[in-house]
Amino acid sequence: IAGILDDGSDVAHLLGLDIFVGGKKSGKIVKDYHAMFNHDHFVDWFGRLLDKVEKLWWSSAVFVMDNAKYHKGKPKSTPKGSWKKTDLY
Image 1: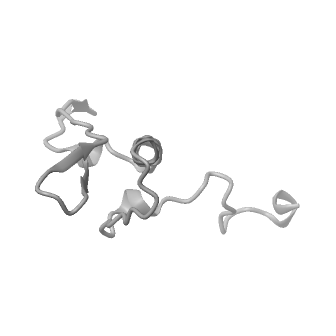
Image 2 (image 1 turned 30 degrees about the vertical axis):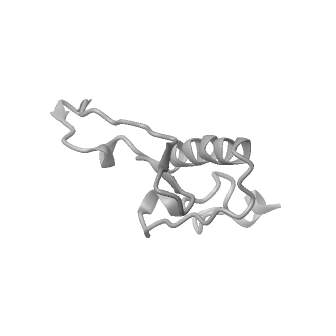
């Protein structure tokens, strides 16, 4: 996963590069990053990317993302339908 910053000049900047190498999961070789990448990792990565953009003094950056599952996570404190009313208070 990478963040690419294009400022309109002939040179683009590569920010926030994370390289995922296949590993083992349940005894099977993971062939791509999808099994290793989750919402928590994305939030951490995106926070580091924002820090780098801020250090470059970019105040009007636009972030374009697809509709990947890990972009749409919910906080762990989000109530679930299985929770009882007493758990919500």
